[in-house]
Image 1 (cartoon, rainbow, N blue to C red):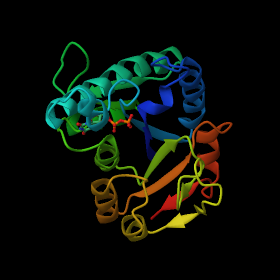
Image 2 (cartoon, rainbow, N blue to C red):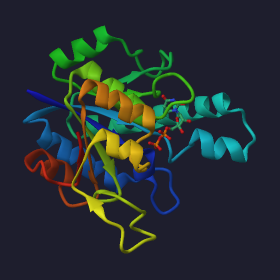
Image 3 (tube, rainbow, N blue to C red):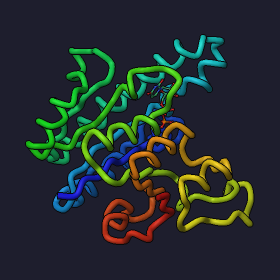
Length: 231
Ligand code: UDP
């Protein structure tokens, strides 16, 4: 079965000032139920709805590595919540954490991943990489490689990669296809440089699309031209 790694930003859970968007989580899980009939999915979850290292850490005058530790814990909170939503939707999901927290989730290891894949479980990867100074985007590429997925779907709030912020600049141009090199040289704000470089080295295709569009995940599965593709 084809495998895909879906990266969801914590930002997607922000809703009306609340830290978690129940309606989005429910719709996401319902689509995943369908998607799993044809694809095996892994999920990397961010933590930006609770804490983003560089941003919130600066406000609190925290050293970056301390701030990133809080950020990684934020991804674990989202992971615990999403795990529960997935299970309520009837999905056999497994939460794994890069941060050692045995009361919360088993630690990520290749053995645990392979075992879950054999059982056809949907793995939620929480705790980032377990290391500061990197983002969950880099983590998404690493976990895609670990589950042997050839695509990473970056689920966002915009329908494509643009040459400028489409919310601020109405003439911004959307890209259908980009090379890794173009993303780096044009300094497009898709994923951090480390993530793009790793994806390029291992030929992981990155697809960026609006996850709030109707049935976005199912559309992405059936139509390779949805959103922007980096390859
Ligand atoms: N983080 C980290 N190492 C990682 C992944 C995440 O230190 O491998 C921290 C970092 O502070 C980041 C926060 O966790 O700001 C939440 O992740 P991210 O900002 O990528 O989440 P998103 O914006 O996707 O919700």
